[in-house]
Length: 96
Image (cartoon, rainbow, N blue to C red; front, top):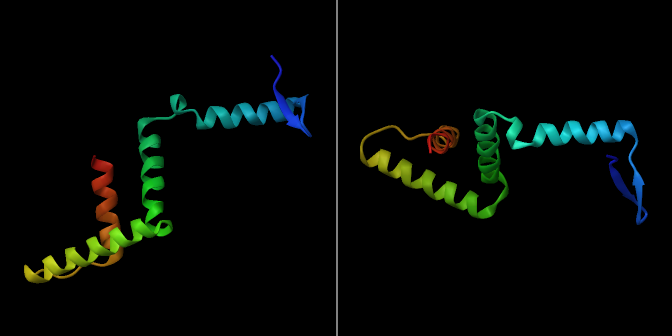
């Protein structure tokens, strides 16, 4: 079965090299060919990368950071850094 691509509105048969590259990419991205650990790792990366991209996630992160440090101060515990909170949130996400 041939693989086709769209070139200037026309369906053209892909070269064997293009077909092999497509099949390799499809196989690599097919969830059925990944371990649960790989899927979880990719999902974690997608979610946590939003901390730096989405304004709402940034806002929520800052609110959580502020509240966590206020509570820690009231309890007489040392404050944490943003990096420490980010690791803690990743660990919580990974454990869900």
